[in-house]
Length: 98
Length: 377
Ligand code: SF4
Image (cartoon, rainbow over all chains, first blue to last red; front, side, top):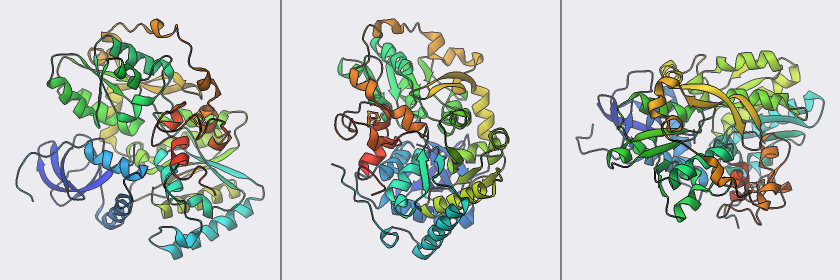
């Protein structure tokens, strides 16, 4: 439950960001994260909130871990938890992709 | 039967860097022998750590003499019966209960939320606190968000409570706070836990300095580690080094994610909305300061203040005889293992769990069941 999922910020609309999670466009709230977030940044989303901005040097490694987790079969509980984290972010309303 | 095979040798593990994994495994073996006694038992308190350990078959490469135990790191598993009962009673009284999916099958005294749903209760699964608020906006009926999870998840509930919510929305908090339960486990007379591995993302919120007082008081080291298999191995090497040297302190092996002070903005919101309160953790003990409850100024959002909740009507039924056999509590205290439960994989399976440890994807019994019964084989 506290695994979270990383995603790339496409757009910032006030306290909400439109984020790309491995090809899925979702909204994430920015109330909790303690740094300014801009398009192109990567954030870690947990139950619908960005809990931290991922520092640039760390992005590659973080994404690789989650890609490995998500490649696993449907029944895998760790992959399912990651998908649950993506589902926790509401579907983004239409808008231009960054 | 469980479908996922457990890899049996280091070369078959899905490490991105097998050479590094082998080097870390060798270092771990060496430092474990250098401790000079066996077994060395360390505990982690995070379901995601246990998932990664089981999924990547890490126990296959742990040295003999090293026990890595999963402690009370599953918030669903430690939700106590009366907390489930409160949600069931509110459902019986016609409230819509919004809850994370894992909570539905957690046994209460007489019923789980899934049972209440089968009997006509309106239970809605949500993935986030914000979805529960949306649900309330879409109806005139009362919606109660049955909120579970540790501090990392409670932060999201706090942010929602501080935002705009409709008047028919309230919160039934079953949130738990991890640091106090580490004290309980460290103080258990039978506890052989010589060190703790703390979970990276939770520490991203709290910061690693929060463990300093604990280390000082209990003289056991704490190492913060990430979720990547290599992160876990590196964290274990550091932890056993500290055990070997008899130098209890906090080490942060996940600096790219965890800072000394953590996310202060998140902490501010968490503690504005919640206060700690003592309460039972299922199967473990009464944990002083172990529960997160809404502060008085948020009483208008607190289901416990808003509604009369009479649990006695559920208590005419004793919990089922099988529940008495469940050793979930001993497992979470590091005193026992799922394979020693006579119900494991027989009467107790994920489809029909007897104990809460078989319910959640973060519960030790469910994780072991999913990854082959006994992930050390
Ligand atoms: S297998 Fe089921 S009954 Fe046995 S300890 Fe685990 S959760 Fe409890």
